[in-house]
Length: 347
Image 1: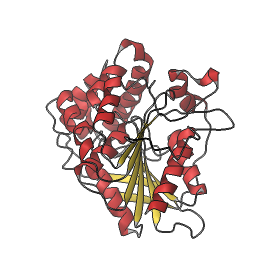
Image 2 (image 1 turned 120 degrees about the vertical axis):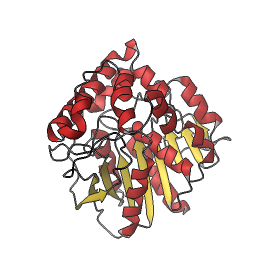
Image 3 (image 1 turned 30 degrees about the vertical axis):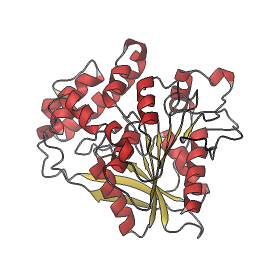
Image 4 (image 1 turned 45 degrees about the vertical axis):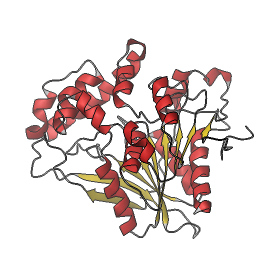
């Protein structure tokens, strides 16, 4: 390969993406953890805060209190200059994150430098300004992405770019597979297209540290919600702590959203079955050494790839990592920016 992106296009649309971090940074766990533990980055200036009301009847298990209207909160930053005034990128964080996740901030800065406005969306129920919010989020909740894109169009943005990371990468792919989305170009980084397989890997002994990290965040969030909205969350918080992610989903996520159990939730929310139906342009980047995704998921991606989908499978990069060193920075920021520029030129 002659460069990291735009990708060369061999037959089949599947690419062995060039990515060469320094040897000290090549391990899957270093790549996965480095940005979270080491990176320091400030948010871009916020032009406007988006508040998007969403339906609470999706959350069938929670007794939502009258004071707890559910909304999506986004931090919108307008790009300077007239180059792309009617275009915006919607950035969606992963499990346990927020609109202030470091990888989200890094990509926001990169796109703004390219003249593209961005909105960093918090998923429903994410803490805002240190305050617990009603509601919960889950993967595959495509209704919220539809509401966000509709809100952007109502504000005059004619072309929309969407980037999802990990949990929301799966949501973006499921959303694309449910219906055609005119005027949308998407990018998914490290998406778990089979949620059950991903959760089982995180719950495996070899990934104990990651499991503890996610459970700590989920327990802390649940406790804060129980204090702020006891009628809705106290009974769920009383069951904590949970020893596995699957147990959390069995006892909290699944009943909250009206699923029978975690297995039912994973099956309904996974994107794997709708991948062949995607008609809009989307790029997926998955590291072959991702500790949360097994080879079977990658085989599903390749075998079910529609013509509108490009898949890049670098050998290294971990899970939402792709750090190349202090000079080169984070490769996924360049890849997303280049892909969105390329899609813009192609119409």
